[in-house]
Image (cartoon, rainbow, N blue to C red; front, top):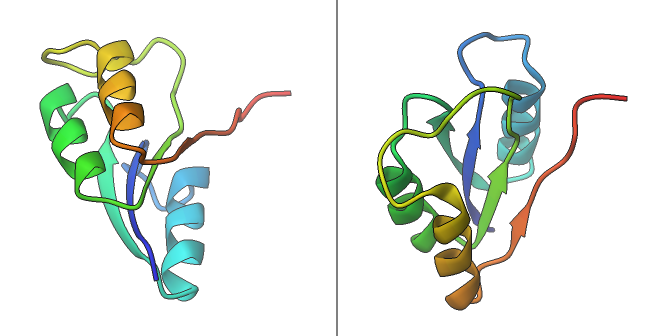
Length: 91
């Protein structure tokens, strides 16, 4: 099974991210939850580089602290051949 680094909002039990992480775990995957606005970009990069997949569900207006910026983080993840995915929570 896959190890998945997942950046999103896990502060509450009823968020989409929380439900998706639990579904992935029920399928046998390991999910590393990274709380958006708390996890630094370096923590995100480290977790993603140690994973088989990086998922990011971004909440509008929330920022990932630290450097490098998330555009560079995504480029570094891509350069290592690690797939990334997201989905949009709005209509």
